[in-house]
Image (tube, rainbow, N blue to C red):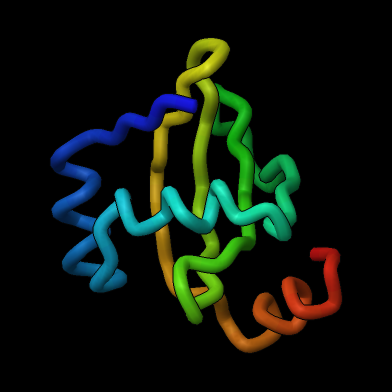
Length: 92
């Protein structure tokens, strides 16, 4: 899998969440990760939300797949307490 992100979004994510977008890659590759489609809004593209681990931290990563084999990382943040519970329970 190949990953990309917008440098301006990366800087914004670092300021807002204190995480680089690249920090989400291990969470996306976590074999125990849980993913689902974010259909809360009409984004103009299909967005995927993934709960996965990067070392000992559970992260929530939002991505889109503009082409097969390419994942664009949109945002990365630490999972909230209830989201960590979802991950630990094995389902969102």
